[in-house]
Structures are given as structure tokens and as C-alpha cells.
Image (cartoon, rainbow, N blue to C red; front, side, top):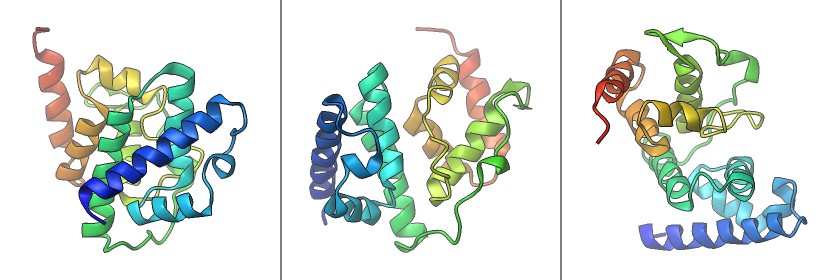
Length: 178
């Protein structure tokens, strides 16, 4: 499937789920995504729960935008296809394995949690109870001047080097608003 084809299909699946959710008929991933749509999402390394969470947040708070969701999904898809050869991870992490939102790294509260969630998102290990880009992640990222996809890309590029991600955030936090 070409880049344009999967993006168009993804938009159709997303838009349909928004319509179902808005009509009060789809309050679960299973109600929003049929078997064919679930199979398509699996080819991207995306679970129905992950896309449902984005749909739900959009319907309730009008964020994140579809463009941000597409970019985040594109990063995950690339990781899934290139680094994981289209194979699911060996296991999904437990919610208890993630740092609390009160933990700090380099004096930055929430950073350990979102780092762990971003790495799990990339690897397909995020449990259904957690969302990368949730209502806690978005305000944190906005406060440091980094978008959802930009942060995920930085985490991907940094691998396990927390220092590279910290450096990006410190630079952004020290930039003059323009």
C-alpha cells in the first residue's frame, strides 16, 4: 500500500469513527471499528484502542487534530514496518511499569512518564489503559513548546538516550516566544 493510499484509508477510518462516536453509538473501539478496519489498523502497527483514544479526545476537546494523529501514526507505522519488520511486540507493558506523572527527570515533572509512554507507543507496547498524547501529555508538551509528533520523533531518534530528549526540551523551554 502506497503512502498516499494508507493515509487516505486511515482518514476514512478516522472520520467514520468520529461520526459513530458523535452519534452516541460508538463508545468502545469495537463499536467504532469493524473487523476490516481493525485489520487495516494492524497493518500500521496501530491498535483500535489507540485510534479510539484519539477519536474520543477529538470529539470531547477538539484536540489533537487529525493531522497530528496522522503524523504520530506515520511515525509508529514506519517504526513498525522498518524496525519491527511488521511484527507485533512480544508483550504489552503493564500500566504499573510506567512512572507516575509526579516523577521528574532533569527537574522536569512528567518527563519520565511521557518518555516511557512514547517508547512504548513506538514499540507497540502501550497498554490499552494508557494513551500517548493524552490530556496530561498534551499540556505538558505545549508547556515546553514541542508537539506530539515532534516529541515522538525525538524519542525515536534518541533511542534510550534520555539526555538527547532533555536537551531538546531545555532548548525549547529557553527559547524566546516569537
